[in-house]
Length: 280
Image (cartoon, rainbow, N blue to C red; front, side, top):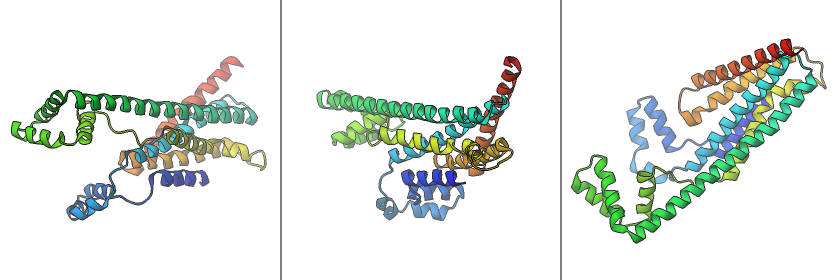
């Protein structure tokens, strides 16, 4: 499907399709290939790889989950309206309205969520930096206790504390991740996150409406059946793409997404049908 190919291209644009050392290590682990695992952990391989970009992975998640929500919610509207025996123009009005409104809502929510995370990260980092500069002895003791609680012997915790606190940037970073459990978010763009969500929602959410739109220009029968088949294929593709995030089996992931979307659509269809019986 053309839209499915577009989704894959968006994933490549934001996430890249070149297998990193970490990806190779994961595949080697799945196959229990000790030789390959050793190869990916050689010093030259580790030194040659750029440090992992957390932000890039974030956008892949936005794309995939935006796409899955776009397909499920739009087809649920289509199924409910079809169950209520509404006309094609009404189905299109409801579907397109949902596509734009819900897509914008998701994008706006993603933007505000990412922006809030960045603001929280910066505020906490400022506080930790101030504490390192003004109460260094207390902060050193906190670092020492962090490693002691991890089970390190006292002399080892002391040595690690000495090394870490010799560099203020490393010191603050350790306090952010180990004491507060906050991962760096400074490289995440709220705008990119919102755009990735909105575009993937639109592209994927268009699939359930495609044959309804085509029915205006060409003679197409069984429009809802064709829409259901297209939606099912799209759900499976998006579910399979979730392995970019979950690192699970792509077939299982695709079937899981297909079942969830199918249940949502069935419920929507039955509700539409029952409401028609009650109202009309």
